[in-house]
Image (cartoon, rainbow, N blue to C red; front, top):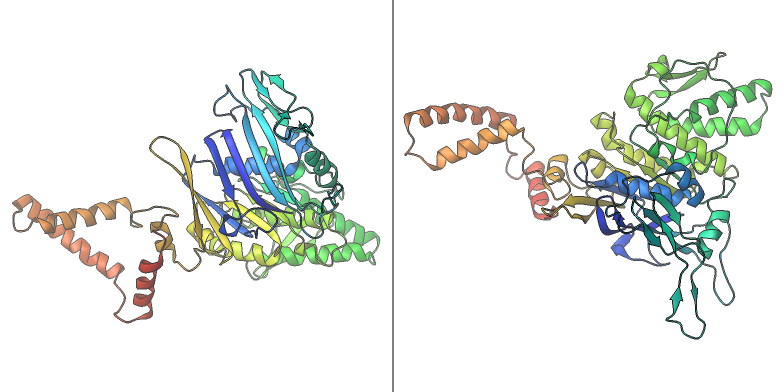
Length: 470
């Protein structure tokens, strides 16, 4: 499964906005998806709202109502219903084939949820819409009045089929998971017991809607596998899962970091540059990556047990604030690590980091959200930022910074040039200020010396200036 587009109407800050995740904004069965989509924008422009809306749509109608039992504040104008609309495509390995008489099997699906506020509104659902066979223009719906914040699912034939074949806990394929910005292992120093709960559609998205929920499945899973192997050292399935899981985790951590062992007491010990460290003592950056990667690996292994390498499975993963707790070196590399470890997943991530935006490679799309003077949210599509350096991206439309200097330094530079332009008409006080700023500019030139004419750095700067999106 992969995402083709999503549309939000009257949802929080979005009046009516569609976001397309395919090359050349194409739609339909022939559309080609981007495998990495980065959502950029200042705080409060709707990035998390888009990810949560996608989480609800991909969770399926039953799990969505559990994740968001009362959608208070979701409707922008409560005098009319809000609307969440998504288009998804089936991939090889996804279960089932939806078809009807005289029609080829469908691989492209679309469906809608409605959201109501605290005012009475009519919603055109509750029963499949039908079309008069004689007059194709006559479309009728059943309508129902809602007076409280409610998530209402449109009970169409397609959504009913997806409920059984795609969103059921035992559905093969159709993988999707979402992670909120507070991804973490448990903070408690506890001894884990060798038990394991199977993943559910709801639990795949729980941290997007519950900030206090820790990602403990990975830790429990490792203890569970160790317990199985202690009982039966020849348990080939447990050996395979542990091998695949530990290798995937190691590929997403800095070199020299790996799972060392599980203690008899049920504690997981990592080896970090030759030193053994329990998970509770790892840094927030390590714990954040381990929590995300470990949970994702565990869910893929449960959903695709028959694949030689479940990390190759297709699906959609949503991640909010991917850069949190990560050092700039990790921020630059994390997109590449994820894409290499999970080559067939479609990642949609929100971030404030230019390093993550440029680290996803060529087959990536950046969607920038911006609020205009009237408060309306607009979007801009930016392709392949990977050829630019961080300063160039920060000054591009992707981030919109005028300067990458500190505000104080930028103010001094502007003041210096203003005084220079007024020479020789300065008064004594202004001449004194200019003298101090002249010394400041000399120090600045030493810290930011322009590249030598004809050098690679000079040619790169010229290329970026000519080719950076305007």
